[in-house]
Image (cartoon, rainbow over all chains, first blue to last red; front, side, top):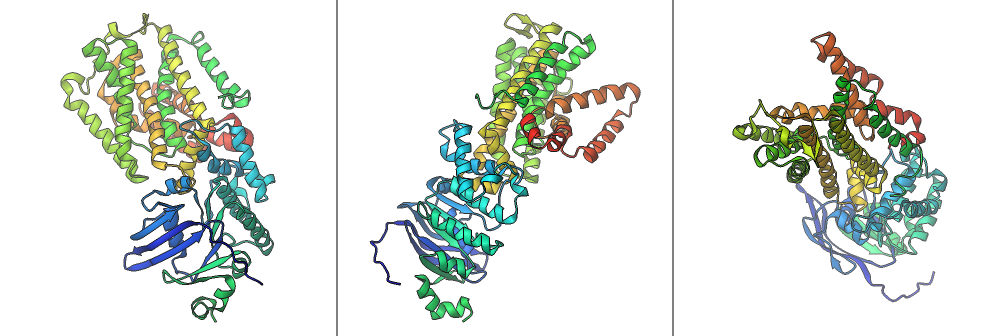
Length: 250
Length: 321
């Protein structure tokens, strides 16, 4: 496959010296990371490598011990999680986190509502509903809009998470192990979905399933014990000795 | 607005309840006439509590201080500054809102059990403050709300018909406001905060501010109820700021249905008459109340209307927001 040389896209996200200690453990250790606009990037690494901690630092769910996060050219290190969401960083949870008692539609409406609220005046319900239904249709849940989110199958709940991510209209969509627990069929559909999403957003993906990673990611960052072990195109990563030893079990 | 008050079963049901309550005054005996007026004012207190607890999941044990702030704000203004109805009501309401924002800003830094304890502490401090200034507040004994000040734009609030109508007016405002919150996007955010705070935050909502907003609406309703209570029933006393008055709205809401607009009314009504009727038969009426609460938890774990709503499914959600 011939590599097409592209002009370097502007950076959407950058971290410098990002570090997080939990007591004596350094979960994320001095990570410098760069993510250009429009890319699909996968983060892989063995269990306990600090992947979820790393993206939690990006989304602001936890505070760094040291280092900076720059998003779209602005330092967001001091912003709270909800403020970063407003800037365009969306995070979908590793463990499905939805509003179970609400309908699928309401879940997505909540995602879109804040963005469309001006001052205290929320958007008209009809507009919000249409937006929600559109996002649900994109993930293939259009017929399930009325169902209580808690009654959806696990695979559908994962898709609802993604629909909520879409409802936020993010510039960066962080997916934390999105295909965990999905069937092969669902995974195939999911890969198509992420490709489509990537037309508009930059996607950062934590994933264990190598088939998904190799099929989707333009570049891969390998974390091991909180540090960046390697970074490169999928074929480079596959060929990398250090990665083989640390992760792929080679 | 058009979306909230759309012509459907829910709007019709709540409008129907208002019409029945208004019409009831022409059919009631004197005894029940004043009871229902009292229940409507106390239901405003409960509806306020419902916004915080039922919709937003804030289990406060300190709402007596908001009710008390309204009661004393109005009562002291009438007693010492000769402020009549409307002014005293506004002063009571403002006192309650100010106290809510102040106590809320601190208490909302905690959550769960800590929040319960911090609100309880605030309320106890407020209760003891009333005793500390006993010279003015008359502490436990309380004082009679000056009759001359119990007027509203020339109307005598001592008059049963006026009293009932004013109580009804306040009730209608609180009910319509609750209905609007429950059906609006704001209500959806409150419920989101209750159901899954972390997720709400990751959808970009400032959870702390949303809680403070819910608590402020809640405290405003509680304070309005307190101010109206003094004006309409003519007595101001520290017992209304006691811990019992933090527990009552919780019980009323739990009984009627937390997170249901009509729940507080039903709960207040049921509990009031449960005590009223049983205390006519036995001095151990609290035993009966206790048994009723146990039966409620067994058969209506989500309160009467909460359980009814669940049984009705999608229709329930439309009819009982």
